[in-house]
Image 1 (cartoon, rainbow, N blue to C red):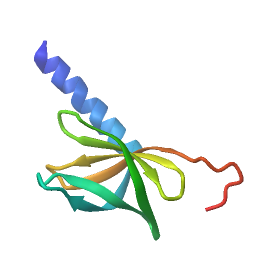
Image 2 (cartoon, rainbow, N blue to C red):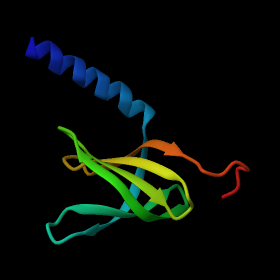
Image 3 (cartoon, rainbow, N blue to C red):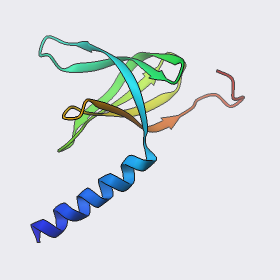
Length: 99
């Protein structure tokens, strides 16, 4: 049973990876050495992190819910083993589409 569960999880992770946006992140390493996002880099756009709203651990990733200085909300995940950051969710607070 465990083998089927592991295989299903791997297939799910592979399909999710195709839908996620790989990003770059500048971090601050706290007193325990844990990396906390301070700036998100999406293409040529820098987004300063105004507030870390939440953070949680999953088996293979560390997730952060962030409020950007632009007023938008982002959920990013860090794959420490592979050194990858990915944008998993984005919600804009602006209705007019301005940056």
